[in-house]
Image (tube, rainbow over all chains, first blue to last red; front, top):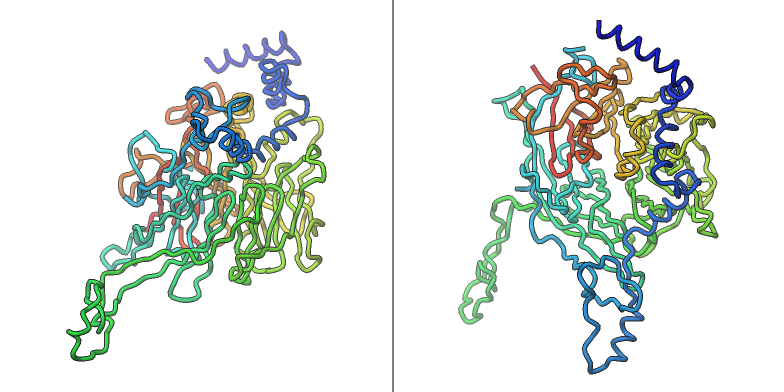
Length: 117
Length: 448
């Protein structure tokens, strides 16, 4: 019974919306694309292309310039080394010269894997 | 269909073991990044984001329980890679193990290759069950003896000791990749192997670590013109001159190393034609191939893209011979999957020993098997709730329509943080290893 009710409703929807609903049924991808463009109108028109690839190739890039750092160290001489940036900054750019201390400390896991536990 | 567990029409899968922590708080280092059986299936290796490798060994079958194939227990564990920072390039190098590949066994020791984004290492895993005792110049604890106390000579002898498994790095293959290594593959000649990053593929000799040959280079002269990257590469299982590599645009290129030193010109290109009317923003992203695997026979290869698994006959480039939908219901969720980055998840796939069934993972800790002969597929779940020893796994179903049957799960209830990206199938038996985020499940065929 409820099944019949649903069928009738769908048919009505189709008469009202017509092409819209049909499109969604035929091509869910295109309707998802429309949704995305509605949320992010500035999204480039290039379909998923070079920007994504370039982002992928740059994975792991941090902002530390050994040249800048050593020059700054040399200039300062006896004075204190550049101090670490404020903790809330995730990217360090601009006038601040990053130090090795600014980079997230990556130490190897000294703990054994839990799979071996 | 209720009786068919999946895979071959009458195979039922049972829970066997689960490894890893139970708690939900997952440390990043514990995220499993690769799973691989060795060529005999006796050893099972896992790699994780913390750069560690754990190797499990199958216990020999006991006469007491012929119904059960041996359990896998820890055999060796070691830190393969450590985090590095390249100060010159301002690049953080993750210690995450991207791939492990076993070498075929040639002597008593086992060898495997493990790689992170930049460096490949050859590890030797050997057993020691004897140790020399009775040295003339040293005490048993290693201290040197006072020579004045040495009045007689004796011949040291080997005595049995508790089994010790040692892992030692035999070769380090470094500084050959500018971009991130995604694949390694050992050649059937057992002398060479390839390593592939986003833009280049290199050929190495296992004995020589200070030189490698570049065999594929797709880097454009102008990086602005970059349109595709290499996503996976593999050597043919028995033709040592042949390898394939897949791309982010959904194509697979087969290369023959006899043709030229630089294999930029492919011998074959496999690509399924696309209907231009159906093209959308997502088309290229979801067509990106995340894994490519030759069948054991070498006649076919399988590719995994975001929504499907395709089987290709090497003799036919125009289209795949079989296509299996892994989770087609996600096609109408692509917008949110793009926003939460799930659309970029890289799922792997694998063949069973006789190439009759293929398997791949999905979300909600579901994994799928497709039986090529019987044309059946099944969805199973790796979860602690189904972890009673030898309990049979019940097929799962995702409801796509408005009506949800009992026991079905709706698409909106799927947990997209529970992804099964890595699965492995024992080369000979129906034993599978399935990795959830931080747990390793082992399932076996129900034997009566």
